[in-house]
Structures are given as structure tokens and as C-alpha cells.
Image 1 (tube, each protein chain N blue to C red):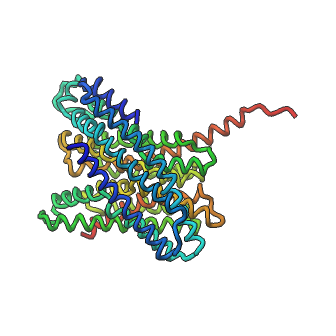
Image 2: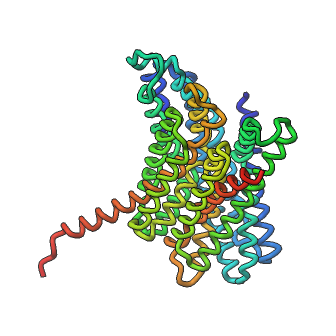
Image 3: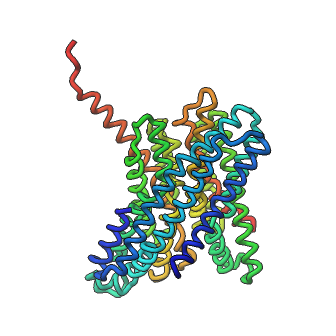
Length: 264
Length: 226
């Protein structure tokens, strides 16, 4: 596909993302709220920035990384490659023979989440609201670690063929228990971070990995077992973000205790 | 962006032991992504954040809760129904359903199943934003609602057809796009800021959480009904 055609298609698909939002917002502003939009010109320019930014972002990914990433996902899950890296002599592959797949899953989960634009947006907001106690990078890294663990667990599940709901329900239990102990101000943010992780960058890469694994591991069906990675990627960040807040609070307490009392 | 390049380079050169193809493409792509992010963040600060907040303030001032809830529903439904990731996943879901013998395997049945699923998910996201907005107005603590939702998910998992469970769990994650997230976040925070007694940090977040939870419940319900 030529670069121009790719550009054109991406602009179109970004437009279908933005257009419903513009129509709904402007409709409500004009018909129901009956007020002009403040700084209309600046807002419109902002929308153009969003459109241009997303288009460039997606074209860049398409051009440079998606094809390579998808190819690698296929190559790494290829049974011939896996057999070459292992000393297991029996015919069947064991779950631990897929070590490179797990490492790739963790690395790609972490890396794509760090680049996710929606997460950057939420992190900026959280940083401003928390008065600086939550740092933009701290939140992004916490979420990215969550996605990395999540995708790794997800690939492990596809390899072993264990039922998805066991993992998810256990994850829910952990979330519920953590909620009891986590600082109250971070709970809603942690819940939100589950949903923001999986957008433009992560979904295509992760889908390729899941599909590759489910097609090549014997006994798995691409249709049934290829799903579930996104679910892991939305669950684990809640746990890691709450942990991040808990560790932060613990650190503050410890630091406060250690600080020498000023002589009076 | 750099982490992705490092990961790809490491696995390509060290693990798979193959050369990096088309270095020029990689460089152009890298530049595009970097520029794109810079533009996007600029647009975020200039359009999406202020717009979400100004709408929240306007609704809070003119104080008609029904219009606000209707707006919340329209926003959730309207942004989800056209979502490309959702369209892709419902198509696959229809194939799974046909493979499991739930629906007949011809184009018409597949299309109507996929469309039904899309409408279901869009409706559930609309409902999610409504519940989320209502929560901010009333000041309900988020954890009870979300945990209640989890219990719902767990109970439905027991009864839903096994083919649909994976899709249902995934559909929670794919519904919220890059443009919707900042806008909805700003809306929630704006509401929490303009209503007396709400703390934007405690009450403002959480809309996205509902939008990733309700689709799971509704997709399983769809699987049960059809």
C-alpha cells in the first residue's frame, strides 16, 4: 500500500472517530444549552490538531512498527522456532518452552502502553488534580507494568489452555481486597486505568500475538482462545496502579517517621 | 516510542537473528509518531479538555439533570457505535457464534448477529456513562458499584454460553477510543468540580471504568438471549 493511500484511509478512519463526538457536542451546545461555545476558534484549531496528530501517529505506526511487530509475533510463536530454542526432547512442547513468547509479550505490552495517547491524557489530568503527588511518568509506568504482567499471563493461559474466567475472577478478588486498603483518592483513577490502556497502539499488536499463539499451539482454536488478552490488559493495571499508590503512601509514612525531629 | 523500537530491535536482532528490514521506513515512521503525539497533546489541551469541562459547567449551571443524562447516553452510544475496533470484534464474534451452532452460518445471519452485538455494546456504554454521571452527582462511592458489577459478571459467566465469554471480557477493553477517553475524563472532572462537596480526584474519575464494565455484562446477556 502506498503512503498516500495509507494517509487517506487513516484520515478517514480518524474522522469517523471524531465526527460523532463533534456532532453530539455541538448539537447539545446549540440546541439544548443554547449557548455559543467559548473560544470556538481555538477549540476548532484544537480539534484539527487532534485529527492531524492521531493521523500522523497511526500512519507512523503502520509504516514502521505494526508490520514488523505482527511478523515477529508470528515468527516467535512458530513451533519450529520454539523447538530450536529448547532442549526438551519429547515431541510435545511444554509451557516453559515458550519463554521467548512470554518475554516478548511482557516487553511489547510495556512498550505499547507507554506510547498510548489516551493514557498520556489521563495521566496529565491526574497529575494536575493530585497537586503533583501522582506523577505523569509514575502513573504511565505503573499502568505499563500492569499491562506487561497482564499480557504475559494471557499468553501463558493460551499456551496452557486453562479457562479464562478463573484468572479474571481471581483478578477481581485481588482488586476488591486492594480496594479496601488503597488510599481512597486513587480508587476511581485505578479503575479508570483499566479501560484507557487498550486503544490505538496496544490492541493491534496484542491481537496479532494472541492470534499467532492460538493458531500454532496444538489444541487451541484461533476463534475461541485468541480472545482474552485485552481482558487481562484491562484488569492488571487496576492492581498495579493501586499498588503504586499504596507503595507511595507507605514510602511517605516511612520517610516522615525517619525525618529527624527539629530541635525546639 | 523509544521502548517499542528497543523491544522490536532486540527481538529481531538477538532472538530471531534477522536483520532489521527497511531502516528508512522505520525512521520515517518514528518521526511521524513523535510529531503525531506532539500534535495530539496540543489538541488535547486546546480542544478536548476545555470542551469537556465547559460542557460540564454549563449543564451544572442550567441544572437540568435529565438533559445531562441524555447527553451522557448520547455521548457513550454515539462514540461507541462507529468504533472500528468494535466493528472488527463483533464480526469475529459472529463467526464464533456460527461455529458453535448458535446461529446459522450464512451472511445474513452473521451480519444481523454482529449488528445486534454492536448495538448492545453501544447501548451498554451509553448506560455506563449515565450511571457514572449519576454517581458523580449523587456522590456514591465508586467501589460498591464496580464490585456489584463484578459480581454480576461472575454470576453471568456461570450461565453464559462458553463461546461468548472471551469476547465479552475483551469487549470491555475495546470500547473506549483515544478521542473519547480524554473528553469523558474531562467531563467527569468538570462535573465533580462544579458540584459542591465533590472532590475531583475522588469523584471525577471513574466514567471509563463503568464504560469498560457494562459491555461485559451486556454481551453475555446478549449471548444468553440469542
